[in-house]
Length: 338
Image (tube, rainbow, N blue to C red; front, side, top):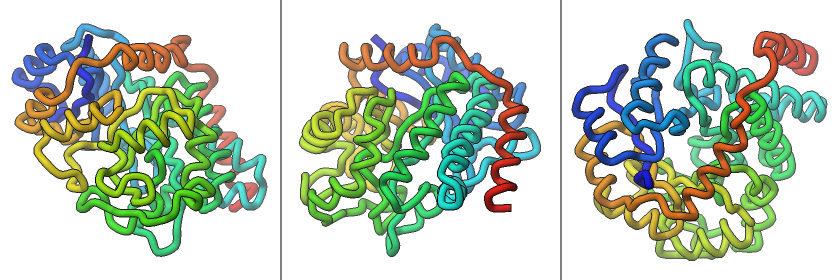
């Protein structure tokens, strides 16, 4: 069984130390960031090299290509997609156009990713936008309306799948109310469970059939006042798995974020013990990755099944012409909001 972990890497190509480490620990997959991206040919060489280390052609390689502020692939080699908020604005003018635009945008992103050997996009973000919350979500959210977020999130997920790339819904069970950035500190949400069910939870429950989700490093006091969602067995089992009905592959958010306490070995162990299938570590720091590898177990039998089910959703590859989709998207944007 592969290790229940996904790792980043340090640069544009793999060092001999990285190759040896990945071969030895055999992680489920990998994730790339802006530091790993230069040209299309370079990214393809890197994704090929990563898969070669684990000897699995279908090893998932992730990236955060949302658009707006969160885009690892940028000009001059790649289109810079708009932030999710734009599709909420289009939807407000013309709901059908908003849905189609969200789907087309994601399909164009997916085509670019697949061409590089990137097979998973950490999109759609289906957190709600709340006034007074930290702007770490902000315009990354489609809307403050749960129904609109669910509808546009579904369209974006469908667009990625159409292009042959797996979507990741995040940050389950909802990050929108956080008043601090989880990269820097641990947010606490004191909203009642009934209110959470009526708002934050609804998009995740509506999209619970999708193949992959990523947790939020947030304490929800009405559910578990002691542990953030990522390391809370109560929240993962009672809310994510049972109440929301999500039975797909569950990833932690990045374990190196300052929202979590303890060492990286402890964080990885606690996340998987709580019910995450996979511990995600992003920064490519070798010392930290070795600690995560020491704390993460082999992927569980249920994790293997969930991974296989996720991969089967895009086993046929992508479909459609990205150029045609982009032209249609540009036309929709021009006609609705100018």
